[in-house]
Amino acid sequence: MALATGILETRGMAALVAATDDMLKAADVRIVGRHGVGSGWVTIVVAGEVAAVETALHRGQEAAAGVGELIRAEVIARPEAAAATAMPHALGGHTATDPDARALGVLETRGVVPLIEGVDAGVKAAAVDISGWAAVGGALCHVAFRGDVAAVQTAIDAARTAAATTGTVIAGLVLPQPAIGVDSLLPPLPAGTTSACGALGMVETTGYVAAVSAGDAMVKEAEVQFTRLTIGSGGRVVALATGSLDSVQAAVRAAAAATTPIAEVAAARVISRPDVQTLACFGQPAAPQTVAAPRAMGLIETRSTIGLVAAIDQMLKAARVEYAGRYKVGYFLTAAVVRGDVGAVKAALDAGAKEAARHGELVAVHLIPRPHPELEERLSHR
View 1: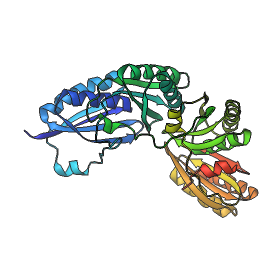
View 2: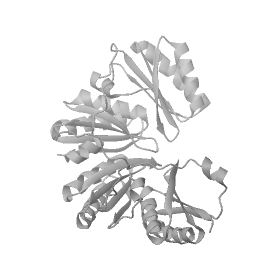
View 3: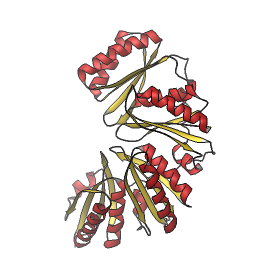
View 4: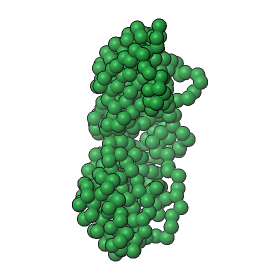
């Protein structure tokens, strides 16, 4: 019989993992690719004989709808070879040769801070391993736990409860015996290790400019270590810092206060005594960058590429400033950075803001007269 292709699309990874697990168990099909198109929409592609693919997709649709949002499922009975070859589907995630037979738990949230809170509660509640995290668009992100069935169920229950105190929980999924092949959908395993600390501070903002200002306020307010900016999706960025509980609490309060006038603060939270697994997964310090002589930093962010390009051009014409790079965070948001004397940077930002507003949506502008060296070491304008 001719081979067929089955395509199933969901909003969110928890629904996709559930659908994939059921499809692989229901019929003799194999995964041939996966794809994400943004806004949290993710796709799995399977192949097999026509009847097998039809059976698999029927079961997959039921599983996806039971966990989250099913977008569409389609069977292509005889796909053209040229069309199939051109499809941008690729497998990623885990590459281990030996499948992990332990139970699998997936927590999915809107926003990174609720996810981190959920993860920390989960690993503290039960003997489970964090198996990586990732964002898929639309501000959605997910984490995977592995362990025995009871432990994973306990971890997911604790994680859902903790995450819900900060933000929106999209789904909590437990697969007691995941099918071989499901691992290919999971995020990469956390790299490296880190030592324990008194507290982890998190400020999640919409946009890069606000996140940089949050990080700068953190390290200027208290004796904390600014570890990194973490990009989620949907334009969300999280500034992370570690230190003693009192210092981190003070730093987060200052960061939230400094950032609120610039852009939306989605969440500002402190985790006391975070588990080392949580820190290894989310709190690994970014690689330090070479810091030039101290100069004022100007940041401008737009929701239009044309607006940003026009703004940069006008800033460089308006004052003696140097373009220092850009940072794209998703949801059409891109920020640019200029450096120079305080007066020159202010003049450049004023000119750039007017130009950006003429060509598109201006999201934020911000001037940091004296950026903290520790902040600058952890930024990566490109």
